[in-house]
Image: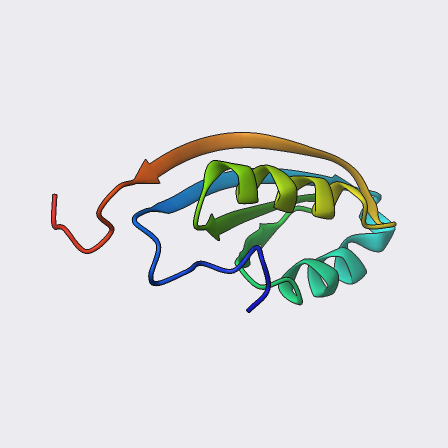
Amino acid sequence: MNSAEPNPAAAGLDISGVVVHVDPLRASAARVALEAIPGVTVHAVSPEGKLVATLETASEALSAALCERIQALPQVQAVAMAYHQLENDPDQEV
């Protein structure tokens, strides 16, 4: 299991929403690279080169590491967190 993948045995689930800024000419390549990372889901890509994605990991530390991994991709100019929530019991209905 990749260290950034959600761990079903973990006590919680860390969910983050991020905006990934890329050169618009490299947006397609960035989307492919992001979607290849376990725990990352790309929801939208704008013509201006902004990708909206969610990250699902087992902890805040893993989410931070995943943001650093995304930032290190050659297509990526910046990563901005837009949302963060820690679910202590992801199976509990709210």
